[in-house]
Image 1 (cartoon, rainbow, N blue to C red):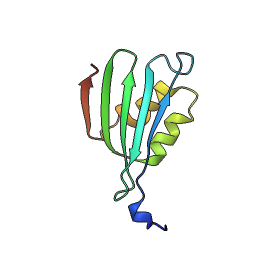
Image 2: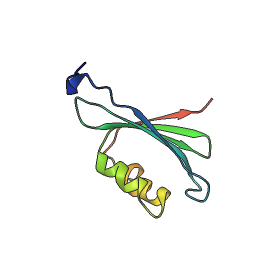
Image 3: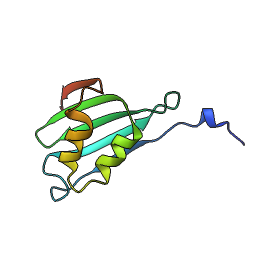
Length: 92
């Protein structure tokens, strides 16, 4: 069976960080919106908080994942900008 590219469902990608990798960020989860090409990004912090960011650029996610400091990259790419709409949640 051959599928059209528009029918393909983007997977949710989970990235877990050890404490050596990041003392602040525990996990990032992202999924691409096929119609916009942007990502929904969930960031789980070791503090227990969870933030969901909308319409995140692929470049920002890549910059965070491949940075020497995950937390610093997250701050400069996402949290210290006004570029992304977000929602703060509390993990159960």
